[in-house]
Length: 133
Image 1 (cartoon, one colour):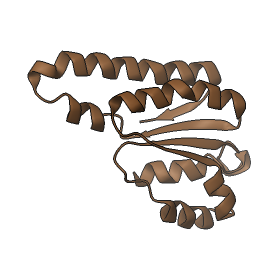
Image 2: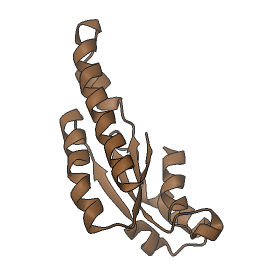
Image 3: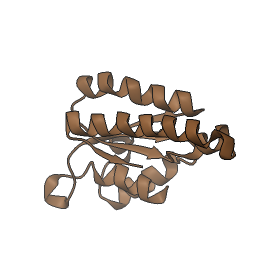
Image 4: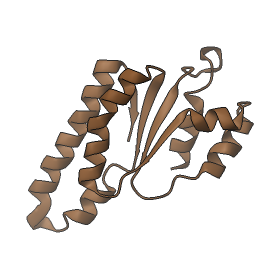
C-alpha cells in the first residue's frame, strides 16, 4: 500500500524528475488508502499537496463485482481526462479471495479474476497507461 501511495505521487512529477506529469486512478479494495500519507509524500516530493491530491481519482471498491464495474467505467474517465497515466488496484485479489473461498470455488474465482486482469490489460494497451496491482 505504501508503494502504491508513493507511485501515485511519483506519476505526477515532471518527466525530468522521473515522473509522467500525469494523474492516477487509485482503486482501494481494503480501505487502506490514506490521504494524510498522500499529503506527506506530496510535500516530500516538492508538490503542492492540494494539487497532488486532486490528481488522484480515488475509488473504493466494496466487492469484486463493484471492483470490475469501476474498471469497466474507467474508459470513459480516461477519455475525458487524458492526463491519467496510472491505474492502481490495491489489492486486486482481496475481494475475490473473500467471496470465493475454498477449492470448490477456485474455478469461478479464477475465471472472474482472469476477466478482471484482461480488463486492465486492455486499458493499459489502449491508452498506454501503467497498471499496478
